[in-house]
Image (tube, rainbow, N blue to C red; front, side, top):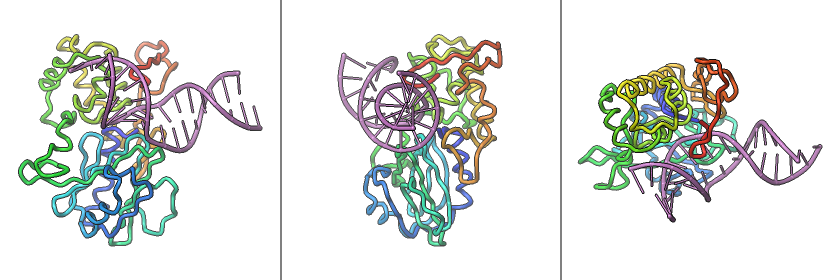
Amino acid sequence: MPELPEVETIARDLRPKLVGAEIAGVRSTWPRTLRTHDAEALADALVGRTVEAVGRRAKQLVVELSGDVALTIHLKMTGQLFVVRAGAPDDPYVRLVLELADGRELRFRDIRKFGKVGLYERDPGTGDLVVERGGAGVFAATGPEPLDPAFTVRDFRRRLRSRRGRLKPLLLDQSFLAGVGNIYADEALWAARLHPLRPAASLRPRDEKRLFDEVRRVLAEAVQRRGSSIDDYTAPDGDGSMQDRLQVYQRTGDPCPRCGRPIRRIVLGARST
DNA sequence: ACGCCTACCTGCTTGC
DNA sequence: TGCAAGCAGGTAGGCG
């Protein structure tokens, strides 16, 4: 399940492979992977452009292209990206291929077909990625990046206190905080010794500080370990190792590393917790 | 604004 | 053994 650390790892792996490469063609085998469902229009818009940068915002990859446009790629649950030579063995789960002028291909593989690829232009006025000039930015409603040095415990407190909900659904809400998914929400809450059902507004200042610190610590360690290779996640340059460090996620029944009692699973908003 | 539901998808596991 | 139900979960969109 690619969350912030997994997407960050993929961005870092792809960057040296893609920057400078020219797009020569587009193949689409499942048009619904494209936000517009229009593979022909995408090909028309992309061919001839060069990759200038590869980055990440929340759980999406952002591939900056020449001419002030950018591709966003959301991997959702089972999306994977690989750079291979054009003749590499075919795969029934590849949904989109960007053919590169140097004979390589960027392949988007996605078993469950939830992933989405979008093409946006950079608004010269605001610098935002938009569908059309003057429109709202794609990330206008996305919350702050938890690992951004400019994001402080003060910001976190202010956001927490303005919300009425419970901690777990709040951490998963991308407009509250960017990039946290089910794995790292559970890990951060456990590390901060806060119950997932606890109302966000009920936290004391020291609880808020602990949660802020643990969210960032868990995410930073996961980035350093190239993410958690669970189920379908792998990066272009290989698996991560964070799965070996997870304390509670998918560990129902195991003894709690803190108190030794069995870890219990509850369901919250149709998600295991 | 919040919580809850369903839809989108497929592969794997579980239970009868 | 075979088959169906259950489960995994990010996000959009709808409803109350």
